[in-house]
Each structure stands twice: as C-alpha cells, then as structure tokens.
Amino acid sequence: MRSTGSWYDVRSNEGTIMQCRLKGKFKIKGLKVTNPIAVGDRVVYEMEDEVRNAGIISDILPRENYIIRQSVHKTAHGHLLATNLDQAVLIATLDFPRTSLGFIDRFLVAAESFRIPTVLIFNKLDLLNDEQISYQHELTELYESLNYKCIFTSAIDGTGVQDFFNILKGKVSLLSGHSGVGKSTLVNAIAPDLDLRTSQVSTFANKGVHTTTFAEMFEIAHETFIIDSPGIKELGLADIEKEEIGHYFPEILELMNECRFHNCLHLDEPNCAVKEAVMEGKIAQSRYFSYLSMMDGGDNRK
Image 1 (tube, rainbow, N blue to C red):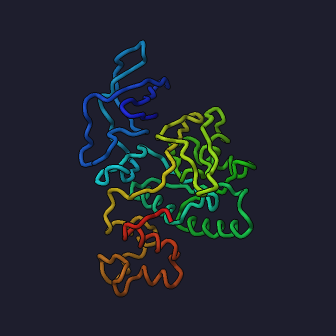
Image 2 (spheres, one colour):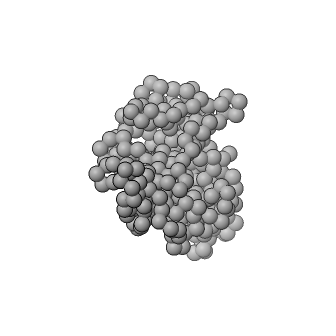
Image 3 (cartoon, one colour):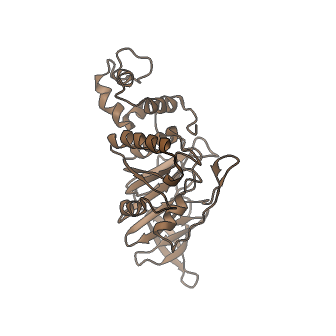
C-alpha cells in the first residue's frame, strides 16, 4: 500500500495493515530499478513480531503490468511508480497550472507501452473562459477519437465528480498529474474520509507545490483502490527504444504498413504515410510534434 524507504505497509487478505521489510536484497531479473518493490505489488510475507504487527516480505509475485519512469538520480535506472494496475488516470488542467500536450502524450505512451488503459480528466473547469472551454472540447474530440475516455471535472462546483468516481469503481487506478492540478481536492470530493493534503498553486511560477512525496494506495470504496502518486515534473520514457515509440501512438501504428520502408521512423523518409497524414490533417500536429519530441529525447514539460 505504501513504501517509505526500507519499510512497506502491506495489506493482508483480511484487510489489516502491517509494516514489513524486505528479506535480503531483491533484484528483479532484467529490470534496472531503484526500487525493487512498488505500490500495487502482491507479496508473500511472514509475521516477525505480532506485538508490533511487523513482518518480512519473502517473495514478490509476478506482475501483471507496471508503469515506470526514469530515475531522477540514476539515469540508467527506472523508478517503478505502480504495479498491477487496471487503469491509469491522468489529471490535467489547461490553466493554473497548464498541463502541456507533450506531457499528456508522453504519459499516454508510457501507459500504452505497458498496455494499461488510460482515462484523461480535465480538471478546474470552473477556471476556464469560453475560449478555453472550446479548446478543451477540441482536445477531448482528438483524444476520444484515439479511444481515450475524457471527463471534465471541477471539485469546486461538483461538475463531473460522480463521473470521476464511476470510472474508479471496482478497479485499481493510478492517479497522476503535475503538482497543483487538483488531484487531492478531487479525491477528497469523492472520499472525504481520506482528507488528503492539498496546497495552493504558487502564483509566482504558476506551478503546484508537492503535497505527495511518495506513492500510496488507498481503498476508497469496496474493491476500489487508488494509487496517489507524487506530482510528476517530468516523465522520462524508460525501457522504450526509438523504433518502438510509434507503436504506442494508435494513429501512427494504424498507418505504419502503408509507409514505403518497413522500418520507417516517420522523420525524413520518402513516401511516409504518417507524414502525409499529418499534412492532410488526419493526424493532429500536436500529436506528431509530441512524437518528434520523444524521438529527439526532448523535454516534455513545455
């Protein structure tokens, strides 16, 4: 349920929470990560001290999936955000703070690469003017055409809050987004008992202040779990080769076989079906620019 360094909060099948530590050193074969165990992992444990309600984790069960980002400190390593997910939910805002399309697309690619369905929540609807609302509808049209469900919410006036709860019901969901997008406020609106910490967005930098410092899983209703992850400043793509990136853009994947070269990277190659689709407006320019940025290894925060 939670990791705070060398200790892990483990929830038993009966629903009790105990503190456990890892037995010896764990290395996951073929996976270079800074954290051997992550929130969402299913583990085998044995009690060590019943009085202190403490145990030892002896095994990590095989993962159905996981989502990973590049480690901030060790560039050759990844950092596991969460495992065994039913879906990833990205909370974005078009203003105060602005979530870039590059960041949204990078998150979608990361989730797509692990076959994790993603839902986009556009929050803080109450702060948008008519022009911004119109733009948000355009974005929704774009992402829904690619089979990503989109929901508009405002924790302030209650818009979409029930829809937000409905998409989480009965699932294990990773909640993510930049600091300041209103993740904690939205969760508090559907699960007030959690009372997650919230903070104001700094008007100086138009950025949020980190209120979550580590990933943590909460049960907000029967069989309904959310994993609240730290506000992510950047999501480096880990474990994805350049040749693979296009496979995680549904609209690029669809056209790949129509390119002249079977190993086309959709950059400067002649007779590229993907570039033609961009010029004809069949692929959104913003999505193609995100693709180019990822191929270039560029910064996705802009």
